[in-house]
Amino acid sequence: MRILTVQIQPERAPVDVPSVLRAFERVAEQKSLVIDREFTSGDDSGRYLNFSFFTRDHAGLWAYITKNVYSDPALGEALAASSIAVCNGVDDSGGHTVLHHFDSAS
Image: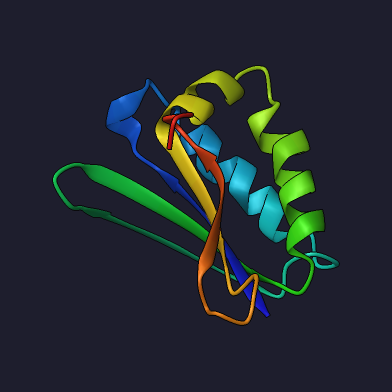
């Protein structure tokens, strides 16, 4: 099993947090892709929201998130500018793969 996490840092771009929450709730409803989910938030030198999804199909889940959340006309631009997406457990090393980073140079 893998964990795909999208972290939103709302201070980086004007993100409509309630709309983002609804969008990720819809992702969580995709039972063919999501085994379980965990949504957390906090403040570590700036506010953050973590949307974590436990999956056996990280590629399919990332494709769904890209198509239905990052490509959303109302959310996509601000989300791209304020988020980091990673997938843990992609290989046997226990490391992670960066799927998206607000700083494209990272």
